[in-house]
Length: 247
Image (cartoon, rainbow, N blue to C red; front, side, top):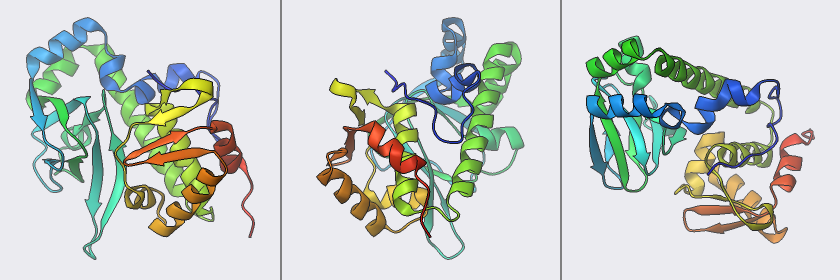
């Protein structure tokens, strides 16, 4: 079940559902049943324990994964040895499709955050599937365009934007994609992310995330548990996200 919110700041609301269906729901959910059956036949289901590296940066893009259950983080190593967190992927999302499409080595590492079950499809079989299923190819195209738009928006928003505002934008975006609705308008984020991982996603220090979450807990906006965040008041987070930064 997805969290249905108002469009995030900066997003056009015309045809929003139509244009971002695959990006919000995930590739697998946007397929019809006959397409899922065909894709299952082309691959095989694999299970990965928490901490397992599903894809390695620089490796040959020889297969595409479709997450059925569980969560993974996408990271990239920098020249200085530090690792940057690029994204989180969950149920119905694809992994490894960009490397397969451009024919280049994988550009990121993908590690399981908890137990993951995924459909692994060899690259050649995935290509054959898309060639024979035009709708599925269109769904994948929308997914990839949506991801590029998200990446551009994150890069643009990080310039001259406060840490709390970036964190609010991130939590609202994750809630829109993966949130589980609760009572009285609350939204649970069942994502096993640490404060450090949240910080790397917004390009700020972990202390910035910790301070913002402490304030929001005191104000009754969020409840934080181990690897889980409950947004009690999405409207209050939206106010933070839409507020003008003070310089």
